[in-house]
Image 1 (cartoon, helix red, strand yellow):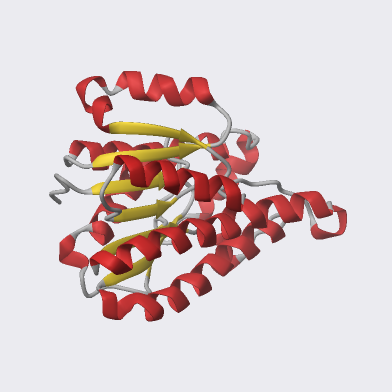
Image 2 (image 1 turned 120 degrees about the vertical axis):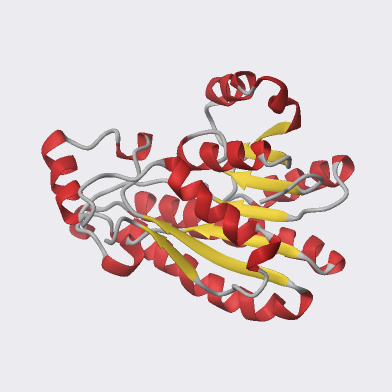
Length: 245
């Protein structure tokens, strides 16, 4: 798990699971470009909390679902860094509602950020990885895409779409020594679950064979493996980190 001299991009990389992933790569010696969309204060506080390691963290504020903003990010990135070794698509949102009451806006926004954002970031990363004939792309999906949960039709569709996208892309780029995989975290103790009522949180814990929520660090460990040189023969796969869900 040595990533010295490697350059890593993490979308949604300043909070929750994405933050843990950014920290793990920094601890392993990588230079990390972390994307965030809105909470600049939280992003800057994260960088400050890292001490000396924060010197290798570069913050980028943009919307991964907007083509022009993604293009602009990579233009800026290319001027600063010579390559892209790893891309982790961790940016994601939830806007829960039963389908009969869900607004078109909430459907579109979740699909745009979670799925279209994954496509756009991967598109431009692959262009750079292909030339160097090396790369790792890890997409953060969810068991919701496999199981489906009531009130999460948009979220489940976006996460199932990421898995199909991953399998297709992995076949396109395999000959160039680029691997593309998913990590599928179950119920992880982050702010994404902080709005759950206590009764619902307990209900979800009881669904998990291990009877607890996972931690962001447990997810980042799986990401680090798939990003390593030791995972060169793993592609098109989905690693479940869900406590047996």
